Length: 277
Image (cartoon, rainbow, N blue to C red; front, side, top):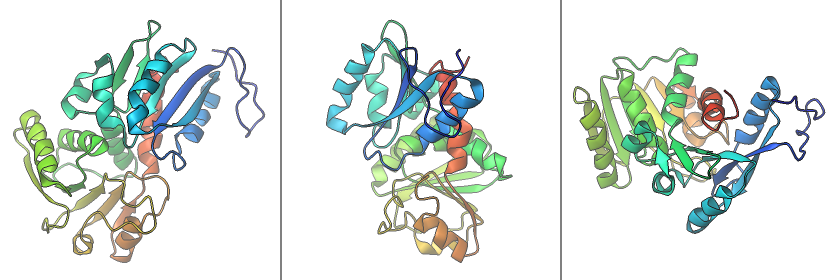
C-alpha cells in the first residue's frame, strides 16, 4: 500500500485513494481506537483513516445498509452498545462470534457483504498476559454479561481458569451466558449471580460493563470484593483511572487498565478488515 504523507505526529492526509474505516458507538466521544489504529496505519505505511461515527441503536441497521454501498470502505469496529445487535445484522460471522453472541469487528467485502468477528476476548487475555497476569488455575469474577463480557468469558475459559463467576444486574442474562460457556467448556466451574451479591473470594476481578465511564457511576462489584482480590482489570479505556481501579489500588490490589486490551486487538482488527495482510 502507499505510504501516508501526513505530517509527522499530525492527522493523516486524506486523498481520493484513502481507504475508509470506522468505529460505531453510542456515545462516541470516549473512544481511543482512532488514535491507536492511525498509529498502526503509520507504522505499516497504510493509506487509511478510521472515523468515529455516533450511531444510536435505532439507526444501526440503516447505517449498516448505507455503508454497504461505499466502495472505498473497508469495514468498522462496533462497540457499546452495538456488539450484540451486530451479530444478526452481518451477512456472516465467525464461529467464535456465533458462540459468543456478539460481533465487534466487521469487514466489508467487495460485493458489500458484511463479515463479522469477535476479538474483545482475545485482546483482553493477551493484554493481561503482556503484563504477566496468568489466568491458569485462577478464580475469576466477571462483571457484565453483554458483548464484551461474553467474549471475555469464553477467552478466560480457554486460558485454563479454575472457576468463573459471572455477575450481572439481570441474573437471567448472566445465567444464559454461563450456560453457553459451560456448553463449550464442560470441565469449567461456571456460576451466575446478581451484581450486588457476594461472590466469595476471587483472585481476579474483571469489569466488562460500562460502569466507570462517568465519574458518578457506582462500582460494578461490591467494594468488599476488592478487599479479597489480587488483580482488578478494566475494559474501559477512558478514563484511564476508573472509580473501580482507584478503589482497587486503595484496597491494595494490582490495577490493570483497559488500554492493553485495545493495543493487543488493534492489529487483529486491522487484519480482519483487510487493512493488514
